Image 1 (cartoon, rainbow, N blue to C red):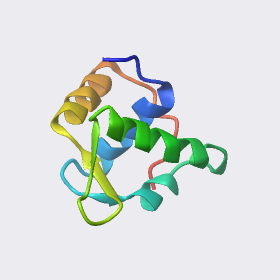
Image 2: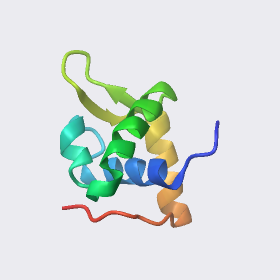
Image 3: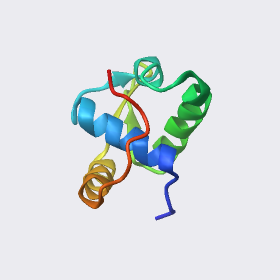
Image 4: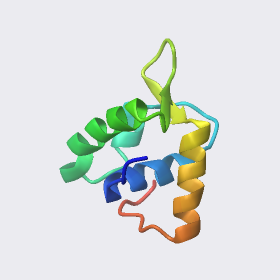
Length: 88
């Protein structure tokens, strides 16, 4: 497993805080971050999907945590990773 960036960790924690099993539209998640980070968040969501930490809905452009993503997010929460955004 590769080392995650702080923004990737924050994205995983955001999915964990919002809802573990629900699919969220990409834009809904991106809008929860500060304007200066939104473009990077979109890119990192795609990277997290490629590393099998997020899964995409088969029909819509919605994402949720995979089982591996859930393990990683809970590990980050347990370790006390910093959350760099305000969840609305």
